[in-house]
Image (cartoon, rainbow, N blue to C red):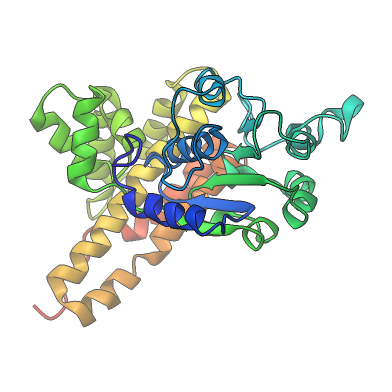
Length: 342
């Protein structure tokens, strides 16, 4: 366990070897399931790289020097952290270049180019890298192509497929695995997401390796809706219009803010996406490898429909239309597939 972070010791060891060999890249792209610790890992790595009391070869900041104290207070002058602004669905140009009155005088690209204040590096962490648009990505392009001396940029996303080619091609990719059920159960108990072993085990099994998903499912209302929705779409036939109304009502109950409704709808779609993924695994086991592959392949359009719906939510499309098209597209794939070969 590196710096109190469970499940990513292999990634920590690779960075330890990289720093020892003095081969640290200028830009890293962290990808992996949401809620598995990528952001926390990025922050601990940044603290290590900025620590002024140790060389960093062992990825062990001293936690005592001025740099570490400023880092812990989130006031370190050589650290930049940007992410989605409240209520926004895309990273904004102003976050990288400054607002219109201060273009190229403020923003991450300007600040990362400055000489370090305390030590030998400046570190920037860009959260929500899935949400670059073409314009904001272009703002960062020159910095990625000609990184300032002694700067390290860490971008955090969920998958390579959601990164723009201009970002992906200029970054060294670091893949983070989903947390194992055992590790996730340990975190759920340690963070008091569940108060007993049985509930923690249930949440860990249903959360697909994600702590944030476990927190969501710890809400009895959300857990109940998930179960009702999955039971509904698993039937041979179901009322699409009634299900659409139920989903929209549940999403609107999240609150009046658009961001809260987007998060709720994204979560609901994620429930169904995980359902189809589990169905694919079950088919491969039940029907044997060759037959299982054929039956699992037939579910790919349903998975694609869920991913497309999620992308539309991220783009702030009309939620009623998203739900309508999404449910219509998955309706033909929801019921259990017949067994092949007995």
